[in-house]
Amino acid sequence: MSERRPIGIFRASWSVLRKDLVLEWRTRARLNALVFFAVATLLMFSFALGPDSKLLEKHAGAYFWLAILFSSVLSLGESFRVEMENACLDGLKLAPVDGRAVFLGKAFGNALMLLLLALVVLPIMGALYGIHLPLGPVWLITTVVLGCLAISAPGTVYAAIAVHARARDVLLPLLLFPLLVPALLAAVKATTLVLQGDPQDDLGDWMKLLGAFDAIYWSLGFVLFPRVIED
Amino acid sequence: MFRVVVFLAITILTGLALRFSVRSARLAIGFGLLGLVTVAIGGYLGLVVAPPERDMGDVYRILYVHVPAAWVGLLCVCLNFGACVAYLFKADWGADSFAEATAEVGLCFSTIAIVLGSIWAKPTWGVYWTWDPRLTTYAIMIVSYSAYLVLRGFIDDPERRAVWSSVVGIIAGVDIPIVYFSVNWWNTLHQQQSSPQTVSKPMVLPLDVSGFAFLFVMICFIALRHRIARARRAEEIAPPEALPSTSREAA
Amino acid sequence: MTPHLTQLVLQQAPAAPVGRIVGGWGYVWACYGIAWSGMALYALSLWVRRPKRKEPSP
Image (cartoon, rainbow over all chains, first blue to last red; front, side, top):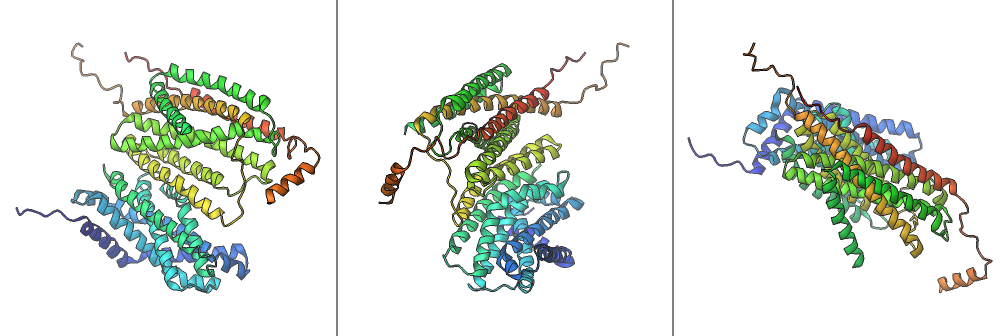
């Protein structure tokens, strides 16, 4: 038998990610459901708050991120439910794949899913709430990317835990929402500044907070996730 | 410098006290009784002896129960974090039980702290709630650690429960300072609430006494709750009783 | 300059009552009551949940 080279961690992550993306592309069921859910949530906010378009425009950032957050619970839960069927996660563990590679693959997959969702929802939100981009699209995209990364890392860890517990649909948001408060604050603030202008030049600070949150939780997830999925 | 030394000394002594109390129910109850007495003394000092404050009159006396409760709540979070990290390094039922105990006791004291803080806010700031960084951080802390305990309740396998709740405890513990920092930042864009920062000399003694009182009560509670957790673990992992006897040849 | 001026003005004012907030003992008793009863209730819950001594198996 020939000597097998150990699979590098990034190659393994890429395999996991590609598997998820191919699966998702074949059915596109998850993405469709997420888009409809997010748009429905945005509509609900509009109806709940009334037709005052000034108010909606002012708080568009907040509604956007709340819609993404609520959708993320569905998305994250689904990403691990598919592994539970047919014991796929056990299969992954039996193949010589490092738990950390599974984390990177899964978390990036979840982040990509949220990013796609966000990019689809943004123009719809633009139409619904009448938003402008005084600072240009680059900052908006950066904020959205950082925010999706922030939801995805701890969300992946918690989804892996919640999917095994009873009442998994309640447990995931219960665990995730208090954790994400700083990221939510920063993302909403940054998005609002991007959409409404930044007179005091605070945007950099909020982006740094969001970036720091991402760095901390991606590192923690990288270290802790293998313990979550090991037997 | 003196304060740092005192803080370290208290930390080390608390650690030792916990170490011995978890093994001996008597010692734990001893701390509880000591705490009861000290609470009474602290209450007397705070309610009767301490002079009224310049701006807040007598209402400020709430500080003598609110601040120690908040300190203990935060201390329990730190202890929980330590226990979770310890468990991931070495799987030990003692560490897991300690994590469970500190989470619950911390939740108890944090809830007391936040309720008292809210009641205190009414006469001083006019509202029951503000997005003050400390109050908000405690609110997040309470939800996080309630979620931690709910998670523990939902997992039946003791080992998985221990590993997963350690992971959750670490992630939640790291979040607390981030929440404080970000809410503080968030608030600086709105008005700053003033809160009594400096405490004058005759008011320090009741605060210190009450602080120790709550600390002793905390030690008692954690130690007793730890015993309960350990007993439950022992029950869960014990082999089933009433196995068919193998030595029936005598009949 | 301003603190100095404030001090001058305060010195002119008649002796202020003991605190700007007068009374409020209701709040104080509520808080102490909640703190003490909260701890007592938790202690009670610990007592109720205490581990039972296992009888030695026959």
